[in-house]
Image 1 (cartoon, rainbow, N blue to C red):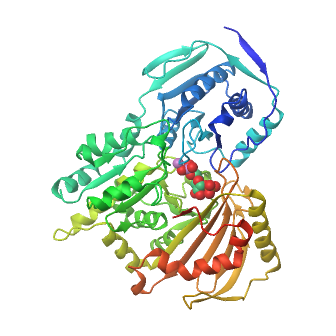
Image 2 (cartoon, helix red, strand yellow):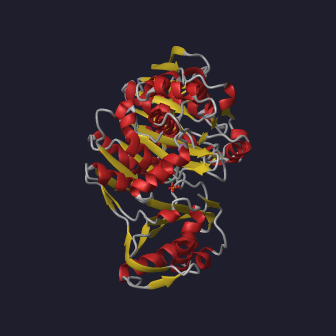
Image 3 (cartoon, protein in one colour):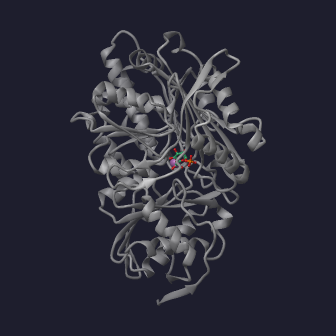
Length: 557
Ligand code: VG1
Ligand code: CO
């Protein structure tokens, strides 16, 4: 067959966000839309003769998109495509495959935790050779290309059968369909103490585990690890068959959307429950009467890291995204480790890891991970928790240690950071911009500094500092500006406002609220109670309800 040049016109808005290009499926289905973006990726790099990894969360429109990448990739001289069977690779598994087989990059077909199906979202994300999301200089180039594209190249051959593991050719390009799960299982086996975990689970049958895949991509991974390797009964996993529309659900592991897990845990008194999102990079840890805030989760994993074989040779450094609570900072200080605060989105951790300065990091948005790959990793976090619990129980032969014991122990040692996020989804972009402008005006003038605000709880908060978060990458010195507005208070509390970069339409405003305490009486308190006063003040200062014309957030985490 001949390589054809298909003429096209640029589409507006093909700007990759926090984590790739995410739009409605219907948008991607427009003639030339997906093709333009894929060509723009190849135009922004030098793909000739290189190897790329292709895979995703298996959502609706993925099989079509894989064939499109085959056509365009091959026409652009790609040397080899390594594709997950049926187009499936979780985001962490894809990151691992890119690194393991020394690929030049990867194209990930996912919109993560956004709902799927013909009327919902699809997404395309480009990852670079370290296995992590492309940095901003690459995504900027891709966006630039989408604005000037006039044609794309295709080689039209018979579609490749994605269900058959093995090697074949697509024109000049080598194609290898790989098992989606095995490389990843091997990776985790090299990280964790599976024997310790297995012994603990088998000797403590009352300590029951339930993992909910929310019909996202992690089902087969969870089965291979929890059931086939760690020997848990098949009842320990649910909703673990990946579906193109995630069974109609919203595959986001939080207390609102992962209600299938929450209900089962409560009803059946499950000590250890966990869930992951559509593409497998997020996690929630939730047991009977015990919820672990992601900000605490990463701090606890960092604190206990020495019980995980991978970290026994030492921890290089710790990090969190800016809106994430400072819980991990306290661990770093105590252990004498270097620690970093980066903008939202996993891509900012990669440079630090590549430079050998970062081992464990996390985001408040249910993202936790380490330098074993360059994406956050849902199943990794779940197994890390099981490894920690197994180690803690080994030290405590007479009393079973559960999630709550680990949490309270951590607060006793480090104090507690209350943390909550309010999301206002699908509000008007104009109104959101006006709110941001008003905050920026305050920041510029310093007009809030010294102001005292008293809440209905009788707590008084005095503003001590207002800033707009800018970040200079310590490794390549690149600068990322306007990453969120921060209002700090004299007692160390803070609130942060940010616009989401992962939505597929309208705007989403996120408000992050954090309060630190060493008052033991508050260690067992409900987060909503602990933060009640500060949340009121955050809403007052930002005039959020007035600007956005909404009473309540759509999601609270
Ligand atoms: C959100 C989260 C952010 C996360 C990103 C991708 O971004 O806040 O912490 O890295 O999603 O996660 P935003 O810009 O909407 O706030 V995922 O699981 O989509 O890859
Ligand atoms: Co995700």
